[in-house]
Amino acid sequence: MNTHDNHRDNDHDHPLVPAAHIDRRTLLRVGGLGFGALLLAACAPKIASNSSASSSSSPRTSAATADTLPGFAEFAATVTTTLSDGVWIIESDGMPSHSMMTGIKSWQQQVPVPQPYSGANAWQIPSQPQLAEHPISARTSLYTGAIALAVNGVPIFNALNNRGDDAYLAGELDNWGGHSGRADDYHYHVAPLHLSERLGVDKPIAYALDGFAIYGTAEPDGSVVAELDEYNGHDLGSGYHYHGTTTYPYINGGLRGVVHVTGDQIEPQPALHPFRPPGEPLRGASITSFTTNAPGKYELTYSLNGGVGAVAYALSGSAVTFTYTDPSGTTRQENYTR
Ligand SMILES: [Zn+2]
Ligand SMILES: [Zn+2]
Image (cartoon, rainbow, N blue to C red; front, side, top):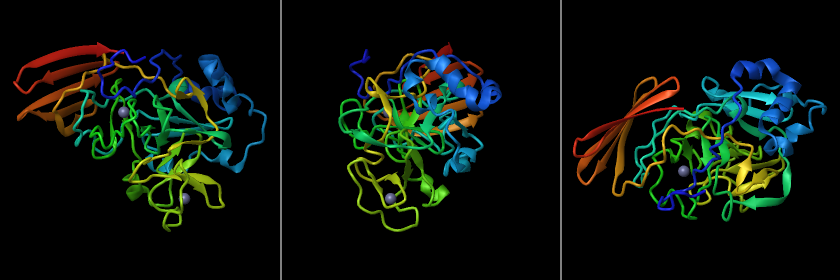
């Protein structure tokens, strides 16, 4: 899949396959037991191994009547959670409310663009996580796709990029631990520990795709984090959970719980629909600012060899216009639809 072998960071290869589109109204209309069947019809066979396929007749627990997961409620304005047959369906556009991109020193000319993580292309995590007989380490695998989802709706990828290098130490991440992938999809590669400031330490900042919660750098009761296993998690008597850390593995160091892996990627997870071909590394560039000028209108600036360049882009429906200004002042415009 790495058709651009000169890329520094080839870890952004979500499957770029078209997914049957199911809009929010349809999702709400089919609801309940019907949704599992609809997902199966839309995404088989990858979803067939998901627990949603066999749990439709099981009695619902108290968790099943909740309309959100701890942590996600704080972001309900932009992230929706729906429980359906033992699976949390989580919809977002993948854009955080904090700023982005500033601080990146190794940049592939990708920018953050809202993503259609909705309908049949929503995130899915089990509501009743199960410990796996054979956990999967992220040190040697899962370099493709997300391994967790932050409660603000932003996906989290392996801390190691596709070359096995630490993306944070390589200067690829912004001041919030994220950057934009080859489909202009913003994601983190380390734990978004900054979310604890908004949420409090008693709330998860993310969930691994196996369904286990990821807390910040304190236990939920505020005490010092107890010893962690190689997956950055533990069970202190109330069930397994992970923690974010300021050193490797930063986030869940693998999946201690049951997940389904196809190739090197956890499935199901949303497919990406890029507007434009992936960019090339811009050696020596540092991103200096990122601003949202109006809804759907963004501008990123970077410094390169003492000059300043910019990428301005505006989304309108399914169309986007990019205006590139290089450090010499030359501008170029590109239009895309998806
Ligand atoms: Zn990445
Ligand atoms: Zn803990």
